[in-house]
Length: 117
Image 1 (cartoon, rainbow, N blue to C red):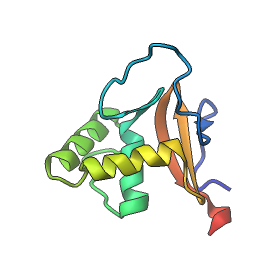
Image 2 (cartoon, one colour):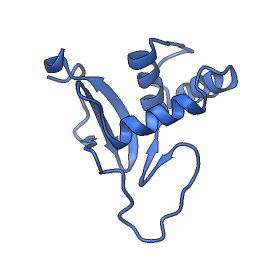
Image 3 (cartoon, one colour):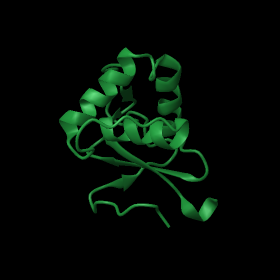
């Protein structure tokens, strides 16, 4: 059982799904994981679940607000290169007990799988 209700358009990310399926697709920045881009919601949820770090500015579902939260965490060293590498590894090969979801090649969410606790 997943801990939160999911939008029907979200698809679970399996190991290896991140690999580029399009020839010539270039690396597009620090949030890119193969064909996926890590979204702000995913990064905030990752920090809450894995590192128990929560910063809330306004309403959490507002994507603009989430962008500011991610920028704040990066500016203050809360999200550094080692954390970004951990996030990429979670997208590439989700750990047992966690489910990662994407929509339109943007990684949107991470949830703790309640069955594996």
